[in-house]
Length: 212
Picture 1 (cartoon, rainbow, N blue to C red):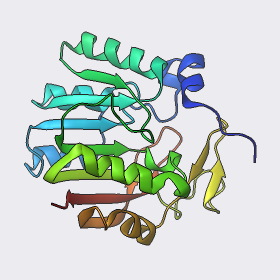
Picture 2: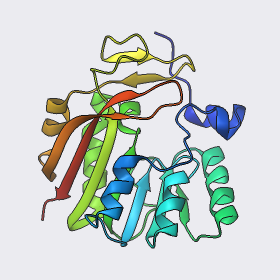
Picture 3: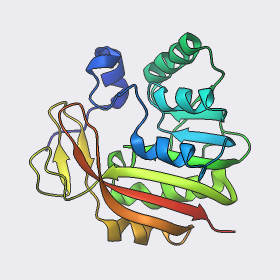
Picture 4: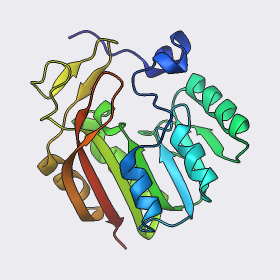
C-alpha cells in the first residue's frame, strides 16, 4: 500500500465538485438531530470541516459555528462558501492530532463527519482526548465514519486504498465503543447507510455525551 495522499493536495488539485467526500447538502443524520431538537442552536465545532458545507448549514440554522481543518486549501473554500451564503462562521487551521491550542473556549456540540476513518488506530486516543477537552461537560458529540461492513473500496480489510490514493481505516461498532467510552457516555452506536458520490456507504454512527 502506497503512502497516503495528503488531503490538502486533493483540495489544491481538484475543484470542490470532484472531491469525493465534498457533498454540499447536509447529511440526513445531522439534519435529523437539529430538526428534532435533540441538538439545539449552541456553540458548535465542526472537526475536519473541509469546504465548510455543514458548518455553513449549521450557522444558517442558528448555531455559533467554528470549523477546524488541517488543509489551508479546504479552509479557503470554506470561507468562500460562508461568504456566498451570507453567514458568519469561524474557520481555524489546526491539526486535529495536535494540541489544538489554536481553538479557544469550549463547545456544546461537536461533530466529525467522515473524518475518523482518516485517523488510524495509533492516533485515535489522542483525537478522542482532544474532542473531550474541547467540549463542556454534558455536551453532545456526533461521529460518523466508515464501517468495516462497507462494500466500497474492495469491501474487505480494515485498511483500504481509495481510487484517489487516500488510505482509510474501516471501524467496527465495538472498536468505537472501546475508544470513546472513557470520555463519553454513548447514547447510540449503530451502523447506518449514508450518501456517497459513488454510491451509499455503511457507516458507524455514534452519538455520545461528554462525561463530567
